[in-house]
Amino acid sequence: MKVSVDISDEYKEPYAVIYTDKVTDDIRRMLDTLSTSETPITALQNEEDIIVLQPKEIYMVRVENGDTILYGENQKYRSRRRLYEIGQQLGKQFMQISKSTLINLSYMDSIEPGFSGTLLLKLKNGCKDYVSRTYLPEFKKYLGL
Image (cartoon, rainbow, N blue to C red):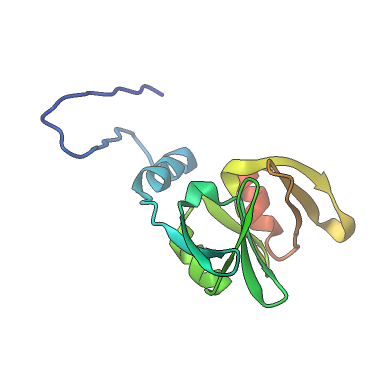
């Protein structure tokens, strides 16, 4: 694939053009990546301080005992929002792997076979969770398996 970047003061906002003979999965992924606009997420730190997080700072979002917990590199935060609401705001870089968990696809570290046909997914910050059978086909498709 050929890539060209033109830098000039006349451009006030980045603009991308893709020339192709057909739309492939790679082209779709690039379009998704280029068109996502990161919107910040607010969460609670220490049960009282409101903190603003960028999606790239979030490794995993999981519902634990009725609370929505956002995992960062070294800390975790609590949100009052529901999992599906956060998932809609985070966009294409995140994937639901179970009824209660979303992961940032950028921070996957390793995958191990689990029990009953599931996969154990480990993230770069040490968090881990199982990809349930319901979400397994979409996850395997993303990995190209």
